[in-house]
Image (cartoon, rainbow, N blue to C red; front, side, top):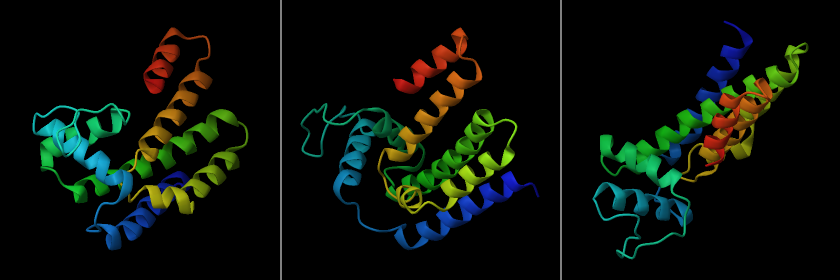
Length: 165
């Protein structure tokens, strides 16, 4: 098994271990807000709070992502937590890739960055919560990857624009 695969397996295993005790935890704070917005979208009530009041308080990408998941699973915070675990592992993979782009002649840079991301307490925490930070982390790293791989490319600029919204 390559070191990269080993780091990704470690990232997934740690996220799964952190997720298990939290899988059925009650929603709190921003989690509840994102869940309510996603549920409202799925049930056809628009981008609205639980009381039915339309809102623009939260950026729409994370609630829309949750709504897409909820169309498949029903409004399930547990399914959303599993998605977060997978997205957290994807973020580690993108950080590994970014390390390779930033330091192509020194592969240890990517491995150290990936290992740090795999075991980072804050990234582990966000990988089990229904917060938007993991998705936005993915978008920021994807933006840097696109721009660093082809800084004068129209395609890279388009990908970068999509990542920024």
